[in-house]
Image (cartoon, rainbow, N blue to C red; front, side):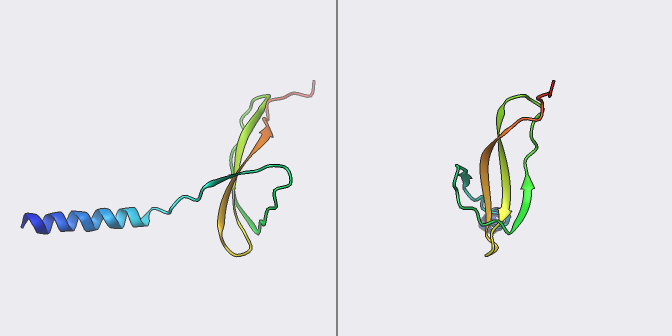
Length: 81
């Protein structure tokens, strides 16, 4: 009976792990990086600071592969004043 419970727990935990999508490695953008963007999935929120900060974009290429790229962007907190 204990063996049956152990097997059931192992099966449930294996299914839970299988349902988690494997995370793709985050690519670092640099000037001249060739991007194949067919669809933008999400963009990170740019903080309200006046400095250069990291941002990320998740996108699909023309073959349906999902990519995550990190790049640098100026924060939204600078005034024109």
